[in-house]
Image (cartoon, rainbow, N blue to C red):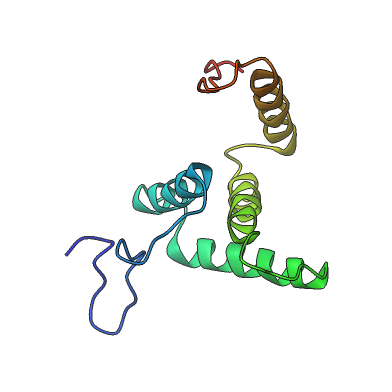
Length: 119
């Protein structure tokens, strides 16, 4: 049985039939969370706790959760989980965000935004 197929009494890691995304980046965040679990970098329990905590914090910030912020919660939960696991730190995440913004601002319309591995 694969890690994603689930077993009796256990929910599958994800459902391909019901997975819909409003933007490609949402699918990428979803895929990243799944891959980090498949490789053991995140456990299902640590991911579930991180996402639940982020959603709870969003509620405390009065996020109305209209469905358009859900994958933003995933992104923040992944960032915090990776920081907690010491794979990255706050400065590395900020540096990558800044590099992406710069690359985005300098990419012609209709072209893919690319970052070099050292950015």
